[in-house]
Length: 149
Image 1 (cartoon, rainbow, N blue to C red):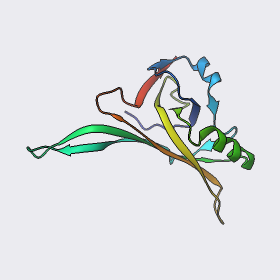
Image 2: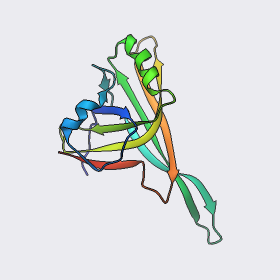
Image 3: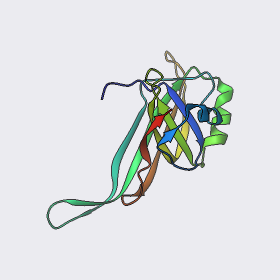
């Protein structure tokens, strides 16, 4: 798989899971925040969450977790209040894709993310969105590839 630069981020309240989505349906999702740019610091990762050591030296993975880390620049300070209202203590689905390969992307279902502003001297103001969703290893994963049509 080639390198991708995920520059499109769409968020909606947590809903039904899917593996294929018409791009026209993204009009009902929100691009957060309006006018902001996603930095290359975007990352979705999975990891074992709860493990049990087995007698043969291996670990049984009982649950997994998906981590979301991203940074947004070029945002209006008024957007922070709206993001806090829409994101804090709410489950959302986050879809990302590279606009140069607009036929595929990745989505995390049912994650809670927290918007953290980083304001400092000699740097651009950044909003970091970070969060984690946990799920049993015997259910559908929360991080899945999607086909965009």
